[in-house]
Image (cartoon, rainbow, N blue to C red; front, side, top):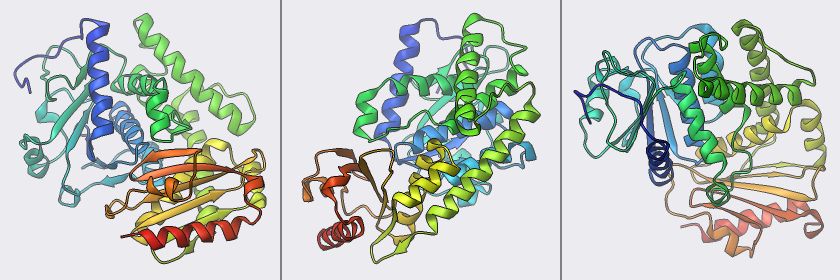
Length: 387
């Protein structure tokens, strides 16, 4: 870490891309992440922390967000987003789950402003922990606190804009998304979290200076409005933050209702908790919620059922809008004895993929005359081979 060096703008696009690629590689290779911000966090700090955590959780990594001070009630929706995405929000440093192999600092000018006490400082002193830094504070009273090659520190409207840049780069990596079976990467919640930070630091775009800053603001504003149009069936053009907060609170209630419906269908079986959403269930969900909310909630339910069972979960959806039945299997964070990719070869499934902790696969409806019987046969077959 360059503790005495003042932060400066990254000089070339090549260097910026190199750092972003290093950060993406760390997200893929590492296991357990702790996301930190600065003392008394503002819109940009919280928005960048949550959007970074959401990106990491897409790859089924252990993710914790640490906040050691109360936040304004207006930002509670961001905490709700974390909870609905199985991201732990820790407010007491003694409850940070270890080991942690990677720390991500967001929107923090220097080490003395990092949120946390001696417990967090001791993690900083551990040379075995990678430190990634995402920040837009340059010069003056600033200093690098990330490891060399992992400091995405440069001119930007906000730290959230830089997290958004990482998201846009990942969105173009079809090879990575396919490997991790991610079909819906840039979700509304990621866009919202990024936009919260950009809006907060720029006062709805009024203080944007460069063409680049205005371009990223426009990109995420357009993406977010597109989500709202698809989910609220109306034109939406926010004029102030209060309107954003009100709309998001309403959509957060949608997520909670969707989650309660799906989790209400769970079956708690030994070793594998599962949910089957049949055609009628999916018709009802499609009528009530947008596809973004449904897909995201099914992923959260799979995470929760895996932790509840202690081993595996399976969420199955028979969506009448497709001729494919979707399966998602997830492994508990504490159960390392089985690579769930082996399920694909066990049942000779070609249309699927993932990684050792989570897979997804699809089968045609015509190949499964009795969905419940098939799911039970899969569960029984997996149980027989579990260590």
